[in-house]
Image (cartoon, rainbow, N blue to C red; front, side, top):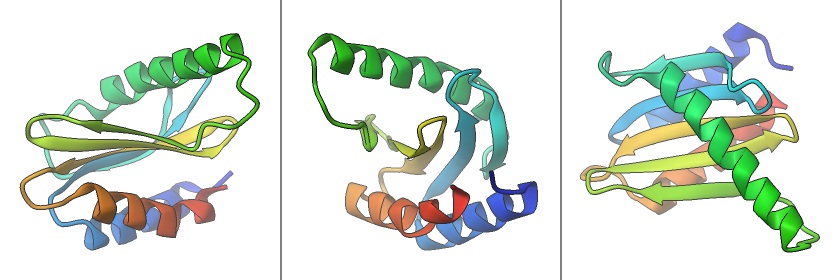
Length: 122
């Protein structure tokens, strides 16, 4: 597992690559606990968002098992009216959760930046 400094360095690079970066966290899938985080908006409750998103990932994995899908979950994209949220699994037990402003970024930029740097967190 990456150190806290490595996590912060990765999030710094991701934030620099994404216009409109709001927040990112590395989350333990089982517990929903935030292992590292960076945010530009203090009102954005990253700890709560991380925990709730861990439940969403677990439910998606449960659905995949019930459908007998023999594949792995890579990422989940969520578009809101004014934000883009990306959940990127970096290992079987952890994922990156990221939020960006939709007015200044787009799905391709967000996904590319996260994919570019996520491997260093495994």
